[in-house]
Amino acid sequence: MLLELLSEFKNKVNSNPKIVPLTKKWEPNIIINVLEREEYYTLKIRNSKVAEILPVVENNDHEVHLEGEEEDLAAIFSGKNNPVQAVLDGSLEIFGEQSDQIKLDIIAMVIWG
Image (cartoon, rainbow, N blue to C red; front, side, top):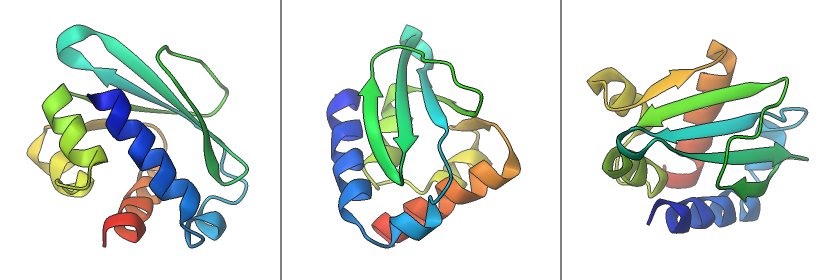
């Protein structure tokens, strides 16, 4: 279920021209940890696009880690839940630089309004 939503998220990001200036020279690996199953996904951001979604952890010098239960992650990546509110509620944890967290919040606002 989550992999399908991540693929839809990838399509939304990659088809939105407003994302390009936001992600210029920003190339992290976004590592998603589904807590209840210790399942991992890596979103590789390259050239202002989600270049790949991998069903494993792929390390990089620049990483952002997201952790949550599958239901919460699915709600966030489908646009049903606001990621900022999810962090405040404790249903999503983000580990990385504050600038990365802000960038992710802005991307979500651009995609889902």
